[in-house]
Length: 90
Image 1 (cartoon, rainbow, N blue to C red):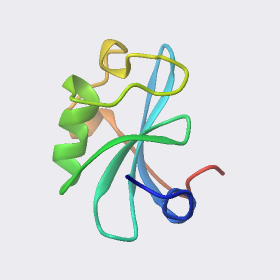
Image 2: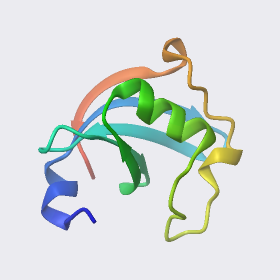
Image 3: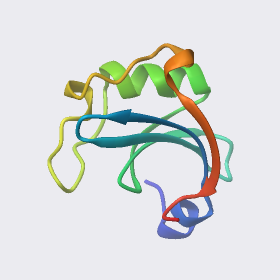
């Protein structure tokens, strides 16, 4: 389980636009990389490629809004992700 303080401290590193909205990958203070949908962590991996893979094919927890992120066409190819640097929720 990830705590609210950790979510807010998470540094968003990558984003990918989809028809449903942006899927982000953020790095938590503990060093894990989280798949983020509208600021909500849907799962984590120990590497950026691992998080990209989870974003594209799962497994992910279901977000509050019920969106199945794996059906949005998220690519696991790193050239399809855009580097960003912002705090989660901003």
